[in-house]
Length: 382
Image (cartoon, rainbow, N blue to C red; front, side, top):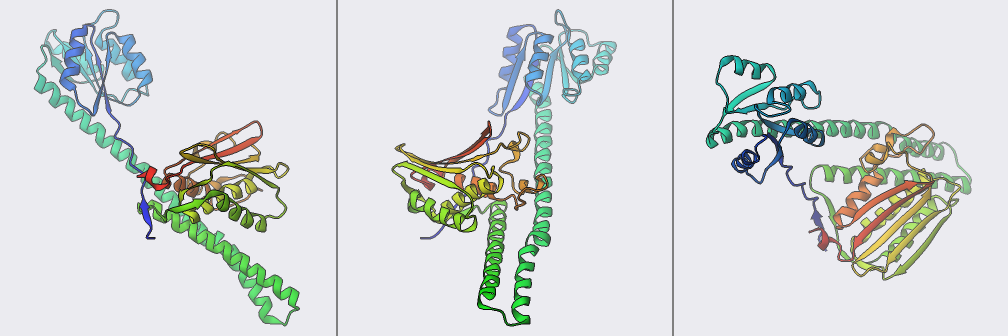
């Protein structure tokens, strides 16, 4: 069966916010109607204090239209407060007024931070034109900020790739070289030769896993996604196969299992095996060794199958937001397992490619990773 490439859907575009402040409700309704657009969210306030409350809730406002003549707090006073806050001082301010066109009046407005004036009755075309300029500037600003974040993350990942190539892959390669040198120098007893051959095999398998993980990350970053070969699959068999590999590598760790319900579904067996190995391996490396790891499969739901991996120990709260980021494992405290930090990132991508979800709970000395997969597999992701 040919592989199916599955891509994560891009997030919907965030609406641009515009604050309109006027003590006359009819004016608020009129301005909102003039600015109406699917891409614009109008925040309405009838007083200065109400406007300040809205700005506390919405820090990403693209433009503020302020009525000058308002009771309790006029537009100039409100503008001074907006400009006085580091959080809101960047918001462009346009004053709306039915008052005088006297230059001293305008100078006072510009001194408080205004970029322009609109005189009532407001010309619809002029309002749309001036507001449109600031909305477009905000779109460009947001786009540049997003691009900067993406480029910064790409640079970080590129640096980590170099670190992997220069350090992590060198370690098993040196072990292979040392074993090969020992075999070449002198004849060895059969048991010693067997032990060295086992070391070569183990190191080469470790290198192969590292390289495959790096290739997966490269595919994801390039937008081609993970190749999925969807077919009927038995998750009980997948788990047993995964446990056999884990127990071979870590024979001293206690791992208990439980399962219930119908565990049949659609999925990529190799990727699901990789998912289980990464999650259980993560528990082995980072969990409390004094607490047994428990793996549970639940197929009692008609439409989904769930996998839960529990281990002892608590993840630091500061690490939780970056838990599924690539290479996050390289910033751990000394003395802990130093993997590539790709395992959980790849797990998340496999889950998404199957149309499922993953979450983690870490409290009271226990950490649980909970994966829910639709039985129909890729169809749910399409």
